[in-house]
Length: 581
Image 1 (cartoon, rainbow, N blue to C red):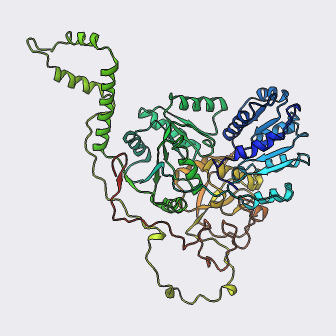
Image 2 (image 1 turned 45 degrees about the horizontal axis):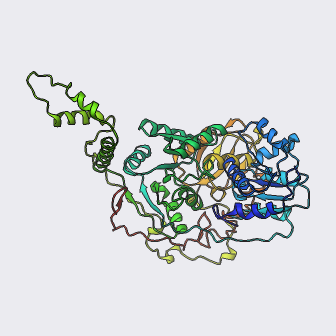
Image 3 (image 1 turned 90 degrees about the vertical axis):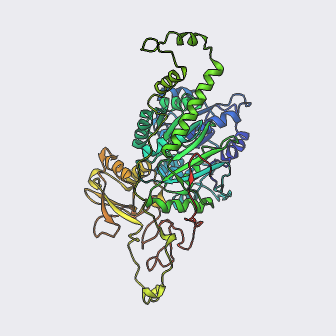
């Protein structure tokens, strides 16, 4: 078990390369990766590791690239193949990939492949590999479905745990803004204008959001582009090259699309949509602060998402300070500073003699009136400001922000008010989850459409970037299905799920209410979770049995209620973003 960025690629590549036979022109090492970005990254690293090994070739196989390109590469007899499960399985079915000489198999980020719904493809591939090879599996977490693979395909595996690197990042300045009084797109533009950055990446939850935010930034004059799974590989690679060489300044991406992204000039990360789990937050902000550079990370938090903020703070072992929205006074100051810098650059680097001569030709309209250079400069300054005025009107007063109190802020309650509790062992098992945590949704696809639980799993995981720990029971009926999701899902996510298709049929997701058990219907697979764990007897998301309701004091995320994050002193003033503390 090891986190992303802990040196796994070198750890599995170097020993496997040491045992590779350069004379044998057949795949000897196979690496499975969840995304094409990670597959390309691993392939590039292994190419670099083997550059002094004559005759060794590496090929990356992933969706979005033309088959004829990959077939030509396979005909050259590469010893190392790195690919995504779907494309590798396609080549195996076509008979264009021969694994009979394989000596080493690596599953990189296995839990991510599980989350994205690829685990069945992984098992199919592993079942076709002959015995006698070495298998290495790397995963940040070890859910039951991953352990099942180790039991089925690995012989007496040894488990090695690497200490998690989820700690405070002193090189990254972190802050959050409570969404209030302004739409997120408008607020994002203000923060970007107030911040000095070389390049930035904006993280959103859905593919549609990447396009919507990119369009909003383009309208505001920013050189930005979207990065999502719908883009073909050529366009994705072109977009990343533009970001690296400075032709592109802002990238709007989902977590899946940004995996493996490593661009040194990224100095700002904005979490436009808060991630559902702390690990994703750590991965996101890790895109900045590279190569010893300082970085900044900003998080947008809606009131109903404060619980997720508390989880991040507990994981990071720090209190993330809150910042205010940049006001008109600060924006005017920033605009003037940037304009003055451009003027100074022209004074230092340009030949202005020809333009001085033009001044003599600019005459005032009234005869006999002398040219006032100061007035002329002011007129030119007003013309040069364009669509971003240097003098901004003061912000309109906003209504007071509603104070939010989450569970950690509640005062103590007298436990005697609950009445007698009774013996927990004798209480009947409660089948439903806490309605304060989960809500029940209906989707208009069911058994008659050929839909299986895994199809719903893949759609929810890929389109919403929601990890398995936040997915409840899925029940299949003839013409529809129901699924439990965290309470308070953002409206834009629900709207996106409404348009998402499963087996070419729109889900048309709609909220039914708080999660309660429904009689009838079929629970496919005995009511399994994303990770394949059986959910009988009202288990929570961590796989632990909940008897007598929430007797152990756990929340739906599996964390104990007693676990408290750092307490924030509400009496302290908030920091200004982009200004002094």
